[in-house]
Image (cartoon, rainbow, N blue to C red; front, side):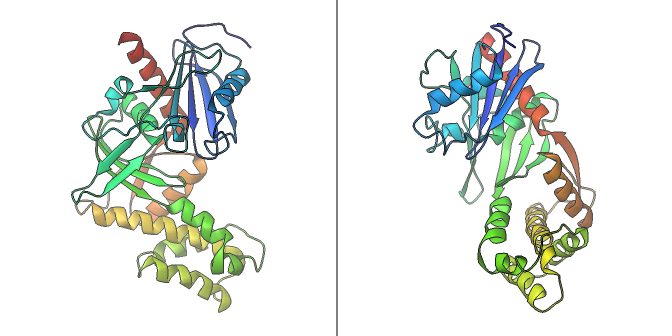
Length: 308
C-alpha cells in the first residue's frame, strides 16, 4: 500500500530495545503501523538505514517524520538537549531538533525530552513519555496526575500543559532483574511460574509494612519456609514493587484523599496490574489509550509545524 500522500506524517517511538512506527493521514487517522526490536541499542551507528527500513515497512511516503524516545539520548542518533518546566507540552513543536540527513528520507525531527528538578534541586528526566503526555493534553487531559508505567514508571503532574512534578520509579527494571538474577530468581525457579491474584494482593498489602529491601528478602523467606509456593514468587514480587511505588506517591502527595484519581497511560496488561494494586490501596485510575495518545501528539505536532 503506497498512499503517495505528502501530508502523511510518520512517528517513531524509539525505545532502548524496541521501536514502534505509525503513519497518519492528513486527518490524523492511522494509515499503517509497524514494530520491531530495532531499539536504540541495536541501531547504534546505523540509525539512517534503520529509519529507511521502518519507512519501507510502513509503505508510505511521508512529508514529515517525527522521532521520540531514546533516539534523542546519548544512546541514540543525536543527543537532543532536555527542555525544562518552563516549556509547555504544547510548545514542544517549537523545540524539535532536525535529525541527521538520511538517504532518500523526508525531513525528520527529534522531539526533546524533559529534565525537571524538585524543590531540593534533584533532577529527574524522561524521553518519549512527553510525546504521549502531549497527546493526552491535546485530547483534553491537560491537568492532574498521570502515570506511565513501564520499565521506568513515570509519575507526572500537569497543569495547563506544563509539567510541575516528575518522579521516576525503576519498578519494571527491578522486577526484570530480580525475576532473573539473584536469590529471588533461584527461589522462583523451584517450580513453574503461574500468576496468582492472591499472591499479588499479598505483595501489595505487605509493601508498606517495612523497607522495600526487607520485604523483598521476605519473598524468598516465604518460599523456603513453605508459606508460599515458588510458582507465586513473580506475582508476589510484582505486588511488592507496584505497591511500594503507589505508596511512595501517596506519601509524596500529603493532600491526597481516598477518592484520588489518576490518569494512566499504558498497555492493558500493565494497566490491569496497576488498577488491581490501586483498588487495594483505595485509589483509582482513569485509563487512557497509550497508542491513541501518541497518535494525537503526532497530529498536533504536524499541524503546529505546518503553521510555524
